Length: 398
Ligand code: AMP
Image 1: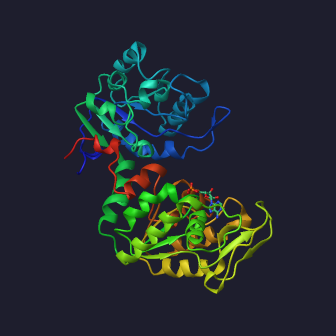
Image 2: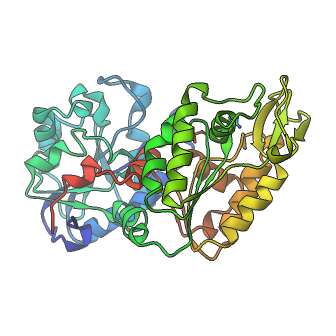
């Protein structure tokens, strides 16, 4: 169902509440990366130039439903003021009489940031009274926090019941454009690259993608689970032995649907899990390759890299979620690095989703070469699974 967009709103002289994602990393009260604040600027500037009286709210970190100084949004208000080059008022709570009074004094084009919504237990349980207090006298709500849109919290879903109109901001609009609209009838071949630690985390997304993709490339420790299920010796590799049946079931379903699943034909392994450790590539599994007892598979092998990159080069649409190995250590990064490069070099529509592949793309400075990098780990997986996000579903239909 199409949703109301920030573009469709008239906000002059109206109090607008906007949920943003200001969950920034902090060290000793200093913001170490302000990407998320920068990312929210287009929606904020759009509303301010439209004459809104703008009230911003966000969570930060994981406080336990009560105030905790180290999770205060105060430093964010300061940084936002610098970026906007205008005063940003800060409220020391997100609800209550003092905040209500302060909000009432806002003029057109002025902005206030409320304190961390998770300082109240009502936020995560989506308490009705909390949400009503947070909405306050705002008549319009904008949600631009994609990373929490898969949670029905007070500030993402609850508030929509206490305003006249709820719209998506530019960030959510773009996430939906790439993760939903563009993948509805993807240009083919549509190749999905999955990696990371666990099959069990991504089982639903695999099921959904079997309905859409032409080929699924599987790397990372996830691939170890499949290889183990096929009867290959995997030594000390990280794998989920209890998911063998599930893995074989996925392979059978893929075959029945005519979706090709590419598992690594060989594996890079180590005896020591540390930077600078010696590594060795197994013989191809088809020729009896195996990960010996003292070894563990920590990356895809060289032949696997070649095969995966050839597949990637021929694709017209690519979704990548999860690293091919333990890329955090340079000694084990080759597979992830080469796959990242192949995706970046591709002329296809390239969508990178999920925390660790985004970190990898940043590590290799390839961000500018991707069509789209999703900002939400859990939320982007749920969209790929075809699920409705509560924070989006609650917005006004058009
Ligand atoms: P996920 O959060 O499921 O995307 O998993 C990402 C993590 O999986 C990264 O921190 C990788 O280091 C780790 N990983 C990927 N491949 C392997 C592997 N073969 N063995 C152990 N850990 C791995």
